[in-house]
Length: 442
Image (cartoon, rainbow, N blue to C red; front, side):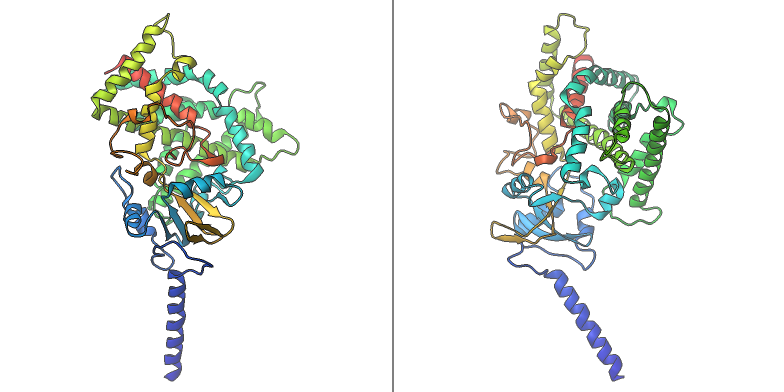
């Protein structure tokens, strides 16, 4: 009997010690305040709980109020420092590749692929970034602007013939079809399988608790990725067997790179890159565009100002029926202010993850080597100390100060060396769609 009691006592001591170490991680200095939550789970359940407001997510807001702008937590078994501090955020982005590197939870890697561009570093990341700029750079966009306008006009014309339209779905389809055409010459009318449907299934479980059991949102997300990747792999294989003489899309460019002797590119990296580009280009932009139109419908004075800018563009044209030019696009000053304000309020990316490569001391706190850091854009964008009435839609607040990149107080497109390469592509699609909308429709 005494052996059982001793065994139970030892077990209790081990568990108690383990729980204590979980709640109080070792550190050479002073860790930021916060809670590590339940053993193994951490505070994952609270973090993944749905948020239907446009304000700072409750998980972040409550902890900011209790602990301040920098606090610790644990997500999916990983210690994380959450930063809502503009100075720390700026420091993180400026020191990427030296003190910090891009990092995302294992579940993210499982969803987006082991070789996804967000998980690659150093020269390999720069190599892929240059490849992406070949598609999304200014010279390519200048040639693409007429196609963007045609797609916008076609979508609006179809919508005008219906009693009502699901705007998110309509813009999503428009942007996906355009991007898939430029990337892989995909035409949904000529394919027996619907590539976009697989991405829709993927997106529905993207921000969900990582429980891979049939029927869960996370499982559906993984199945959507699996089907989409199978389609992309088959398309790449067909193209490699029957290559084209001239480069017509991004697949052609990828195939040419794969053929080069000593190339860094592999088929796995190429497919993960295609998957991420398709997802990022249509899902984020369609969300922002849908929200912009919602904000315009709620703010008639802003809508009137936008309409006046675009009607003035039409009046300056020699031929009123000609399409939008690159020069006209670059002249849409108020439109860019509106897009920036929409991006600030939409907060499509709730968190940007990095990992500390070595121990860091900042503002009296120590961040241990190997810990993850989550930069929180919503807390930055909705900070009343920087933005007067932060929840109010006011594009004019950006007059004379529209950011060309990331700043301490604007992180909608990321920051540092990983500033989003598709930023200009997203702006072109939004600006041209709004131009077609306000000049041709009510």
